Amino acid sequence: MTVMFGSIWCVYMFTVFSLLPLVNASWQGPLLYISNCIQLVALPALMVGNAVIARGTDQRAIEDHTALMEILNDVREELAQVRAFTAGIAQAQKENTERPADLISFANEAVITVNEATASKS
Image (cartoon, rainbow, N blue to C red; front, side):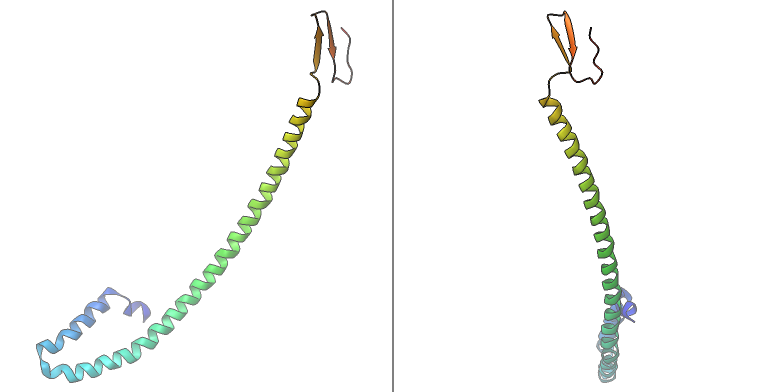
């Protein structure tokens, strides 16, 4: 009934119904009685229909919220992993800038490898 009363065709029908007393004024009494009966039936039906529709909307909102919270938690975990990874890169870069260069050359005659575990002398 909620869908039926919410349609544009119902609006057209009730507009024509309300204009019927203009055709014949003697119909006003019976039409007013019918109109009151329609209101007494339609208003509670619309309220119940809206309550049922609202329950479905509330349930969907709860499900959407749960799904979005799961996605948010996944994004937070991935962000923590990226931060840890980039912190490791930043630390390695800082260590590389603080230690001396790998090769030291003295007047192009002797080359010494500083950071190599098995350094070979040239």
